Image 1 (tube, rainbow, N blue to C red):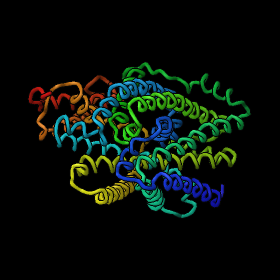
Image 2: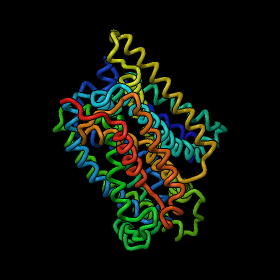
Image 3: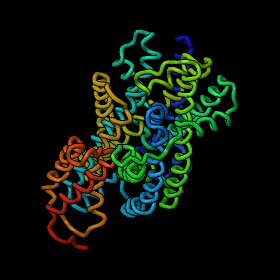
Image 4: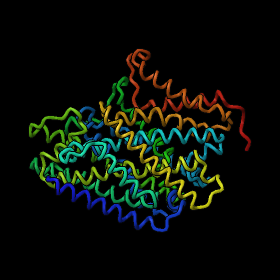
Length: 484
């Protein structure tokens, strides 16, 4: 695929994104930016959230993971389904009842300003790191397979993507992202399905025969019964549920889109529709992983050292040219979806919780100008983090993502659990002690787990341990029952 084709594909897709941004950003107010005026259509939100959840991590790392771990990731996805039930029947009713703009405002009402700001800062840290990792993955691939041939350095490629995302989100916010996510989801799913068809064609078998071949192979092993292993099936299942509760239900980015629906009933429809489709899509990505490894074995293609690179390598170099175009569109969609909602959510959390934009006696114009400055500042932060990850890249991105989430989302899990399931007040000025101590202790347990627990290795369940430690720490600084 030549440089002209790549440039035309990129420009055409980006132009479509900006057209949507122009349509949805007209006459936008702060309420439009933060919650889309609560007029988003639930089925559009549900479909678009698939792309937000997939991003570059699922798009490339999950297929690459199949070679080493088979389909064991599927147990995490099944656990996701349990988490979505909790979100639909526990968290969403509370958010709608309190009419929240930022979900961390709950902590402010329940405990005080310090708790709200602590929760918001942990989200900001979690999302900035997580989204930067996701975006690094896809930009790095585009750099290796596309932009290096133009002589464009990595930091410039990253800056271009960040600037484009900044420009199409700063006006319309959530209302724009709901619709751009829909476009990005469509192209990512097309890339997945069409690539499977192209692989089947090259292997001279039908699509259904390819799927059956993967399902009947050793790659499709789902259950790991060694309890000391990080991917033991029960650990994966329970961890998946808590990952969803923390990384979706307590995540401003994901919940901001849900709360833009008209009412609680529509928000629940969104969650259940989205989760059902997400299960099917993740299974297809695992099938794609098995198909990629089978294709490589059949045609004696060397597996790259970084398994994340297998999908792009085969798409660009070992399939018909249309596969490269399809992959390019899919990966550009993943790059955009990794950061656009994050920029809006980070801006919202900082504006509402940290700066107290709604608590200040400012007119609409001053609030909007302040919000735009914050939006631009976070764009620069994301750019800087991606550059740092490029310099220290040395392990699987998906493993990094969930490891970081285990440390940064754990305190959020503990804070919300204590606030929702106890009647105790806490000494708000001391809240930083337990929420900072819990990740440190969790890291120590993880680092020395094999020595302390007879060879046991912590996996994604570290998130749960972290949340429990935060909960216990909050008990220590509690001060009696809260008044009704």
